[in-house]
Amino acid sequence: MTFVDVVFPAFLFIAGMSIPFALGGRLDRGEAVWKTMLHVLVRTGSLLLLGILMVNESPDSSVMGWSGALWSTLMFLSAILAFSSIRSPAHGATPGHSPRYASLVSLGLRGAGFVVLVYLAFAFRGEGGRRIITLSPFSLHTSWYGILGLIGWAYLIASLAFVLFRTQRTALLGVIVLLFCLYAADRKGAFENFWLARYVGLGEALGSLAAITLAGALLATILLTPDTATHSARATFTLLFIAGCAAGAMLLHRLYGISKNNATPPWCLWSCAISAALWLAFYFLADVRPESRAARLARPFALAGGNVLLAYLLSEMLPSLLEVLRLDDWYAGLAQSNLAGAITRSAACAALLLAVTALLNRLGFRLKL
Image 1 (spheres, rainbow, N blue to C red):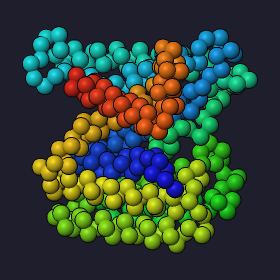
Image 2 (cartoon, one colour; image 1 turned 120 degrees about the vertical axis):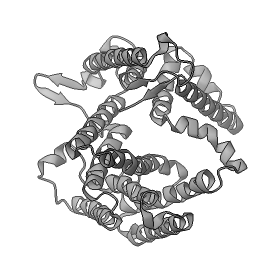
Image 3 (cartoon, rainbow, N blue to C red; image 1 turned 90 degrees about the horizontal axis):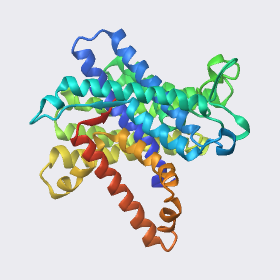
């Protein structure tokens, strides 16, 4: 297990940490539970849609009749537009940049994005003529749903648990244990003939991966409850949380091993422990010592973190965009001379993507599912 194997579960963990604030805020404002759950279902469906399109993002140009790289580029651009949200600047607003104008522009971009996404879904042709969607008979090629699709399934389960138990940490911990039990039962063939198993992995997507997201939600509750209102109480709980996850990972290691592709419980628990440790470090910088030099250096990352889905989609679009622009060979060549060149290229690319995301943030362009 290397640091790369922590990136995806960190996404899951952070998504979980947002749940008590996003859904809890809705419920605290008196929103009906059914409206909150409708919001959860729409967001889950959006993530599944993006995930399915992304996991099928390599069409066969010869079968489709036009550039597969162009299809991929248009897919990401359309996805960005379909879920875009434009806000007028907070200061110096002009009639041409009024909230009403921004709302109309946002609605138009979202509509255009969805129309193009539907067209691309039907236009897709993979190896052997495979399609993403057919109507007669109806079929949908979901594959493994892609990264965003798996986040969608995990988000759905974790949200259901939070809406049911809110900030009751003991109950949330119990659900996490049950989700890992779901993984164990699935590994023993308990759901071989269950209809839902034909559409989604019960042990992984709805079990162990959802447990990571719910673990993030559990940890985030310490920022909302009176008994963990002090920095020391929050640090103590987090350290115990890390120790508990690490102990569970070690106890289950010989039984399941560490495997990202199989979403084994030890991998999930180690990922939770590492993500929690990183969060504790950032919490110290952002809340305990916000004026420290390290905290100031981290602020550019916070700008991109406020619109992280946009940064992610832009990074995923980059390879196909470079191919469309016929810059893919040049870009690949930058990393082939030596290790220093490869690292420099990666750092420059990351900095550029962060800068573009931050600029779009300042212009009021955000992604909202």
